Length: 335
Image (cartoon, rainbow, N blue to C red; front, side):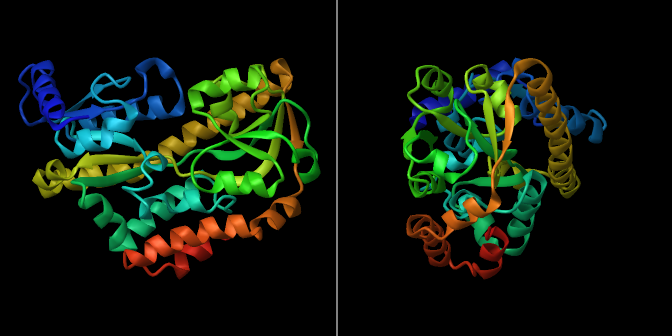
């Protein structure tokens, strides 16, 4: 996105907001308003809570569905003031946000959704490099939205590591390509939106995913075996702000935003778990998706693969180059 377009979009937002005063902030998101998933529903919860906690003095107007900036444009759009708030899919920006992508280099890892979110909160509080990486781009993270615990959704049953050999498995990010190769399988890079067709046409045999997302994308219409492989929760999205907007708030309003970011994590995890349980029941009763246990020891052995270790070392090298002491963080991420 060019700067000219960004500044023009910023002006358009001001007009769209009806010449709103500074008390009306804007949120730009890739999520469709009618998506109905935990991410969209809790975004609306946060917006409603913001108005409630400011006694109606301040509001956030949401521009849904990439109407202002696409997924790949949101960080730059936020940095340039097109929006005040927005959600950034962190793994899509490995070069701009290597430190904040820590979890993505360590899969499998032992933390669930809530634990990953709380770890990100703690790392941002304890290690200034996490905030500084974003501040250098005129961004500020006030909250975190991890993804759910992931397993592997497959077209055919998988009982152990030997059954994955030779399969074509959807891959993305940092750790998954090396992990899939360690399984003697073939990583296939396919966007989320194209994975349904890839499963349907047998371009891929499996995809890493969690139940709620699998149902949301309807992958479970094609692939009927969910391998309960303990990959841990992936880190998903920063709840981000334009740094100038945040620093321009008075201390009381900053405190409301800070508290709301922490409360958001709890609400999001609650809603996501409800969705997850609903999907598991639906799989069991109506959709005929079988949940298959996977031996933990099979996954543990994969972590020692040289390729998997090289990916982990890549993050360590990048973090240390940024001046980060990594020992405690790495210990939390060890499977």
